[in-house]
Length: 219
Image (cartoon, rainbow, N blue to C red; front, side):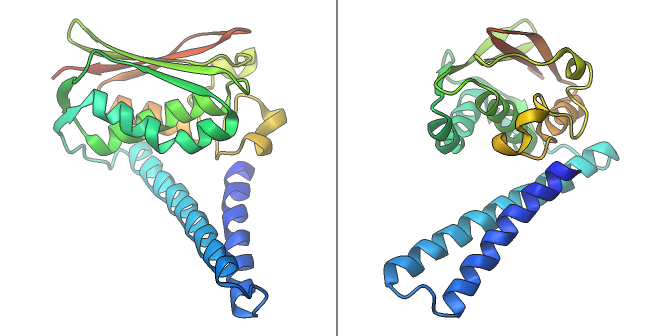
């Protein structure tokens, strides 16, 4: 819970700081005020994201989420996920490679699919080595589709591998605050794919990196 508390306190503190600076006249120039408004927007978006994830995780845990299936394109969803995390990849100096055969149409719940891809890819960026590469490869398989996400990080400690998809489990507790995150991303992704009768599993981890596999059924 300390991870969640920390992740909430940081954007809240930033919101208060910038709002107070605008209100008391500390920020005088139009440029300073515009920058403050931009930072307020970023902090608010981060808070909204955390709250939204927390609500969704609770719905999945209590089996109250009802999937809304519609036509999806896995290629487009992967592109969108990579684009939404481009700022984080740039900050971590991680090169992201997306390998797909082109459009991959299938039936899915786009809201759940987007969360799954976002959290697994985000994990691969955060726990990668700085300056490393993240490879995302999607392919058609018998009865469905497979997405492989492989990073070049230091691997997962043995003590967390069995509990990796539990809430608040972190890959490296020594760098929890430096890396950021609430520790619920993979738990949410695991429950989301399970809700759709799909699977998310750890393929392997070691000194040369970690690889996850997402299996999505075609029907």
